[in-house]
Length: 223
Image (cartoon, rainbow, N blue to C red):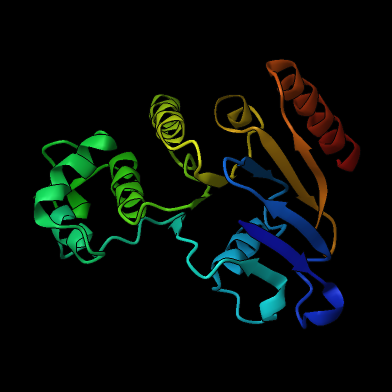
């Protein structure tokens, strides 16, 4: 589905170091690492928003559909949710079913500013799902949400992933516990320039607990 071959020697910027890995159908990846290390830069490189990387750094099929949930919802504030979705090709009659999938039934005529942050993120997620993505990129989807709203969104994402077993996901998060509900694989980005220090698959809750301890020990060592 996707192959990353980022080489420092071929890139004029130094945020990311050498990163060589692949993403396959059904991969659910949680991308962790210290703040400011380059996690968003890596997502932007995958989707083609970091133009300083050579074309060979990210290899993907020409028909790969990528949905990107940014940290900001990026909905047009002067357009209703219906209008925002129709701008990406959703037919008017399909708007309500799509919003219902993300828990926003009956909100089609709302403006983004009439929504809470959690609801706006759900609307932006609906926009991502509208293209039926093969790969879903999520940049800190739980940031700034209170615990109940974060948990509700986490459960929603889990259900959406279960309903789309072939869809791959890369989710930037600061909490390894998110992997327990969403991930079957963890990337850990660290270093100057940043490299994938870990790229490991998860098979059980015990793997998540072990990974959590390793991350905690690493943070304590760096402090």
